[in-house]
Length: 98
Image (cartoon, rainbow, N blue to C red; front, top):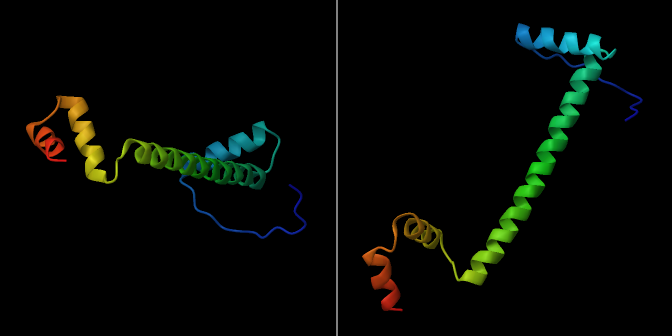
């Protein structure tokens, strides 16, 4: 990514992290700024990808909940309890009155 203008910034790092970044920069024949910039780009790209994955998961879960007739968070907890411990009398009593 070519950038015509760069703005200097100050950051504070714990000494072990600072040494690791300096070692990495030297090993990769890059400047300190290039290593930190790459790390920030990776972090931001990864965060964007995780947010997109979460949105897809939420959409899938919402669709499945609708298909299964799950309308409230309490329904999810009741299903989880039933799967973990077997049907409870309260769940069966409620289902008989519907």
